[in-house]
Length: 198
Image 1 (cartoon, rainbow, N blue to C red):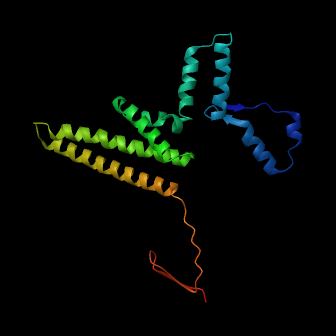
Image 2: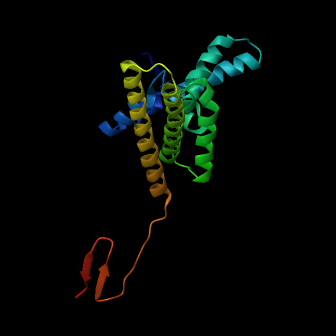
């Protein structure tokens, strides 16, 4: 893995006084080729060369776009798509987008949960189809029974992931409740707490 060192100016070096300044300076200047900022810089340079005169290699641009596509995977559905067979990819991407829209997901964690829900749901569909084919097969032997058992466990696992991810997203998106009680005695039944303000 190669490091890309950003250009350093004399003025920047003169401003380094504490170890914290030095640490922040080094963290800012040293980037790996996998850093999104470095990829953005590289793709910007190649796109300018390619479309504004000097022709660069299309293969280089395609490779950078492939690396780059993972950066915005939560927004584009790229990460969801390549976790499944080709036939399920459009459904997984659309389902993730629908969840993001329905729950108005704006933060990275909310989008990750929406993608996780879509992944789990697509796994349920995929494994259910496999199980259906397996159970409708006319030849039954010990190996096919074990295979069906394994697939049914995967369906259960995907269902649990789907339900827990959906519940978590709903909890994240549900508004918090602030309650102010003006009383000397209060009984909160959900947690069975007795509050005495004496």
